[in-house]
Figure 1 (cartoon, helix red, strand yellow):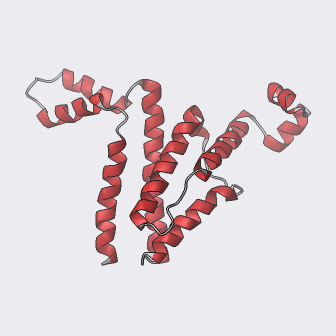
Figure 2 (cartoon, rainbow, N blue to C red; figure 1 turned 180 degrees about the vertical axis):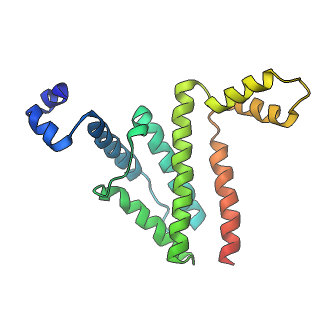
Figure 3 (tube, rainbow, N blue to C red; figure 1 turned 45 degrees about the vertical axis):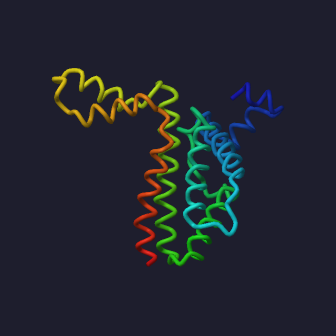
Length: 185
């Protein structure tokens, strides 16, 4: 904290008073970086609600990736109003498409969880050169007979060939959209 106070040109006691500890400082930096990244998202105007949700999920994923190791410190506090602007816009697009406010909120939560999850997974995968669960499953499969679990072996092999599988987020969104389209009808 002393080094940060020196760089900022403030008294360390003032920094400790206003920020608290290192964890709180990391959280503030993570939130600020996340809000900046999310602010770069351009919501398609007049676009289909699916395009808007796809854009939003990708922006969440990319914001997490840009945070890197700081992603573990990210939590959206109520004081971060700048991050709420795109959320309001996404909700409006959903309501305009015919979803109720309640459904729009649930859809937003579901897509947000997907975007955040994809981002966290991308960060973990980049730090460990592949998803840790995939390597653990591969290790377990190596202890079984070669003819055991043929489909799971194919899935693991495909995942090893493309560890940064952006198609997973697209597939998840397509599955959600198919269900939501039926709900609108």
